[in-house]
Length: 149
Image (cartoon, rainbow, N blue to C red; front, side):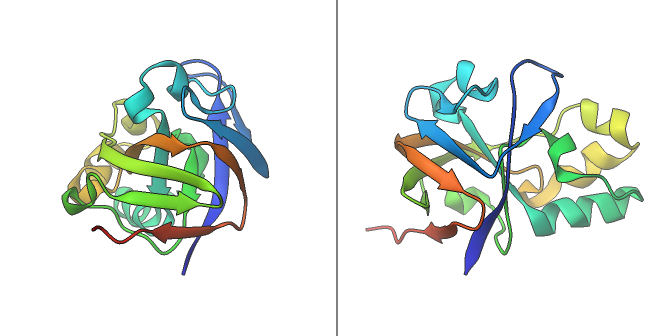
């Protein structure tokens, strides 16, 4: 069973990252006071796989804190793929829909040369989501990939 193991926000591009134990999530702007949510409602929440982040760091040769990826939510025991576009994910009482892959940016190579390339295959950079149902999420919440009908 996958679970939520990290929550992070930042209020502006390249701004300081704040970690949270719990946070409110809205349909209109994603995570409370987060820069991502101010940009596009269809990509307002970003998810990152712990396993994929660790693989990319190992390939680039440096262990880096997951928050430097600037994703909102860190999830253990999950891997993302093209087949998951349109898939709904429930975290606590919040419902998300995966809309696209999160492409790694050049900032990743500023952190560690080769990190951007290591994040590129197999959705290692994470997934972008829109919020379908608002609520609150807390570290330790169960993460459920809902069955398609």
